[in-house]
Amino acid sequence: MAKRLDIKDLNLYYGKFHAVQDVTLQVPARSVTAFIGPSAAASRPCCGR
Image (cartoon, rainbow, N blue to C red; front, side, top):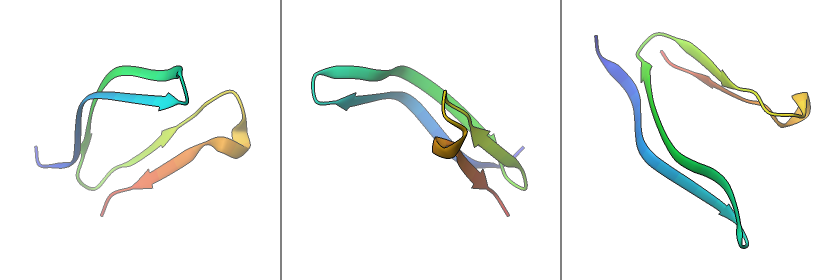
């Protein structure tokens, strides 16, 4: 299966706050994926073609 997005060991900081720790994610081509957090307004859809 072809991958559209491949993330490995992602870490994200807001200042000193470690918000995202060691995330690995593979999103297949021709798929729709959404990252959903505590606020629906802050969700981020990712659409593959």
